[in-house]
Amino acid sequence: MLSHKNIMATNLMLMKKHQPEHYDFFPTTYMLPADMNAFTKEFKKKEPDTFIVKPTHDCQGRGIYLLKDLDDIQDPE
Image (cartoon, rainbow, N blue to C red; front, side):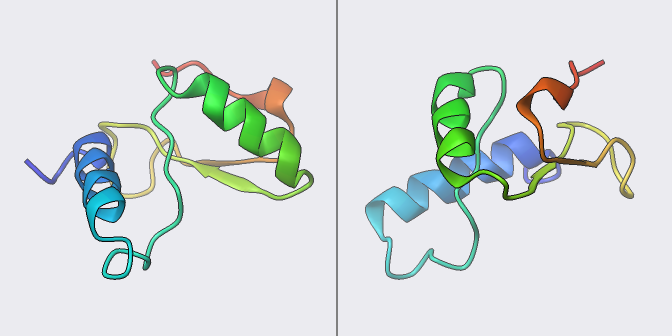
């Protein structure tokens, strides 16, 4: 099912791992809270970049927000 962003991201990251030359069209994606350690490390390395946070099951832009400060991360509802 590709309608859920987390499943699509997992599949794209898997394909990027196996064939990086063909799957370089999207940024590294983190599934929170599972990837929180890797995300925190990347976030601190690239500050003050802005990260786009998208909820797993919402659609039409609902729940999307921009993150510039790690303390502003919201728990999924």
